[in-house]
Image (cartoon, rainbow over all chains, first blue to last red; front, side, top):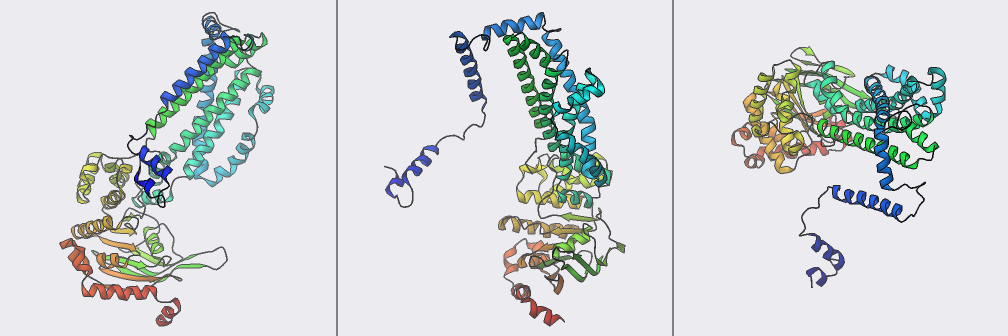
Length: 282
Length: 264
């Protein structure tokens, strides 16, 4: 019998026993990689079983083997005016262009909005107004203005990536602790030195968070725009396949998008690890 | 010489009643002296320091440092804050060297001078560490080294040891006393601890709130013994120390009406 059980007035026995059984263990590992791998394997196995035993018609749920075959076919021979690589590159090119605009316009403008009352006053209302709109709601207007070609899509995507980056840069500037600024000033920093050595690095974590949101917003807007109006891209490929009930090609498209999204997330995590290992530590 | 003449700072409050955080305070800080301002919360001691640092404009009066009026923060006044303000993305050495970098001192020279200062505060082995791997006391030492690096005319310390545990605090007081003995800097030190004020101050000014003003000043000399012996025990049991402590305590705890009555 444990000591705790002998003195129930001071220790509830159940709790004491749990404590005792936890004590000798090593500190728990925080990595979830192994668990996640099991989940992924489980999902794929479930998919195999569902297809194998015909739980759903192949029209709704093609077998993994079919999808794999179709993947090879789409990659080699192409589908809807292009190979898988063509479509993926078309989509990636659009999102890269949009992120470029978001970063090179959004970060400087956001920083300025954080630093200057006038810039904030002028730009915050128009950005707030359009950012509240679902991008697909103003896509028709952009098509009327700019035509059905690449320009309207890149402008649409740029608008959807620009706002989160701009807001993040602005919030980053405003989040700089005032003591940190005072400390730099009393060390003799000029205004330019204050900006480059204090404000910019302090704003970096917020900016990277904004970039993550922008990538998410950009990716979902991209595919949606391609579903509606495009002659290339992963969204277009999925839409074309759906029109012919080629569910296996739809799956191929979805898996490629999921992998791209995962790659973006991992890339951002790596970037955060490299650029701001100190985040949240002081 | 830092000269404060009739300095007042008034904040507009939401209820329309202005807050007189600092009310016609005059004070001189001579070279190689440690002036310690002690008082209860809200007595304006931090306001005084912020005004000298240039973070806060005076409503009335003037502050001059070697004849030059203070209007903005500047490198001639080193500040050590209660909460350390080290940059997490730079290592300890680069944090100490920050002010020298602002002055355009070459990399080699600023690192050499910073290493020397880290030795002075006993952190020579931690130069390459990021600040968040250091304890609170160590971070404050880095803060002191950083403030000293640019060789300011005066060191302003705003309750720098207030957030530390009492043992670390004693070590830090000892460190400051020895740094002061070695460098001969003039220092303004803010604290709410009477013992700390007496241990470190060559001049102790007692401040009272609403409105914030200086109600008494005392000269003391315990810090020289402390810097030499490094032992706080005999100093704090000294008869004069105990008398002064009692006197300052009664001044701080005096009811507000009585205090203003005796002064006017």
